Image 1 (cartoon, rainbow, N blue to C red):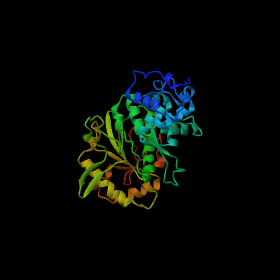
Image 2: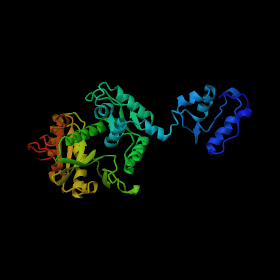
Image 3: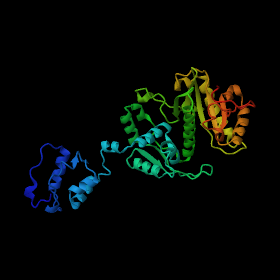
Image 4: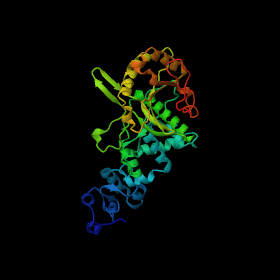
Length: 380
């Protein structure tokens, strides 16, 4: 309603908060607004604690446009100051699947999210629209691929869980362990590497879902907290292990998981190599930099620290490379090392082109560094 005089304002309401009272007093002192632009029921129906309870369309139906301009200029737009309850109502069931996938795999691109959460979206329009909406609400973070690769096709944007999405999942699922999920973006040069780790995780889970004998007991990414049950944040740790600082000796896996099969629980560490040279380019650096850390990890039996429920005394390191020529070149480099000192017997080599849901568990696609025949990941 439009009022013609200041006297018809009425008295200030009593049961309002201090923030609303301040907004009421400031509105009364505005001399630039004419009497025709003043509000009859301002402010209890529009503000609560300085935030909008009504959306933009509802406000425009009730209040004059000049006064709304002053409100937006002083207190912000309803689209930027949205209550958390309103944000919760905007998350659909498939949006919830997107958040859970990002919490599980850490980093995914649009194509992977479309394949996992929107399988009926053929052209990707729905996926892009929903991801843009989640990013606008502060639940996910999108980042463009700054580095292009001739082996991975056109660079699609990557997405990871945002701080708001992590808090939303923890509140929605009543699980405080989700607050420990990593939300920081990896280095721009490491995005393709992290996407390859996520693809290996997706392939393994799809293979396990197609049978009922092998179970995935746990999976940890390199930046993920392992002991989430520990209430003291100072005692949290991840897969990175530093044995000594001078000379420096560390073990830094890309990921690790534990499989259960017929009462046994075995631990596997994952290393992704994206080199494409079939002449062993960078193989010496990989052998020198990786094998001493895993040998010390096996000597101290520290894989039991990462997976306390393991039953095997040793673990296996899976080195996944882009193609078979690179696999064979790395095998030759590992073969030159002393197996007793460097524990090259722990390593298995596989080409990404040979890994799929049918072969990753029981297919003979994992090679040792010697000349023996390939072996499966899990024996039948």
